[in-house]
Image: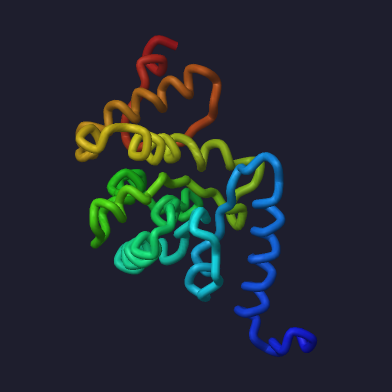
Length: 194
């Protein structure tokens, strides 16, 4: 750090590191591209134009991650969102609604900016999850994120309409032997016929 005259400036150190890593990755013959977390963008690192920025912070505050989406896309970067889809942040009751209601295109930006949203991801961190509960904790919650991201927008406007589809999918998972948590008070046909 002394050699580069960046003593104590860890953001600058991170920037130098990230640029070196991106140079290495971009020199590989596979050309798979690269993705950085939003802090790299926020800290002003001179990332390449084809970098994908992963917006993941402020999961409890939609206003902040929507501002971040607007900022990153205004700079012209493709963007991936996960802020609202941390499946390990569970709540009592029907918590799947909040995952389903998150729309990665719902931020103050132009159509051009919204076209830079390339998708999202459901995340599961291991602070309160291990091999004993990772499958039931992840599923069927991840199904709500999948439907939201992979279905037409006009099909994913209503949690009332989504509930029976997602419940049916949960039942299919159970019928195939997966131990998954309930969405809420309901039952599967196999519960009656078993």
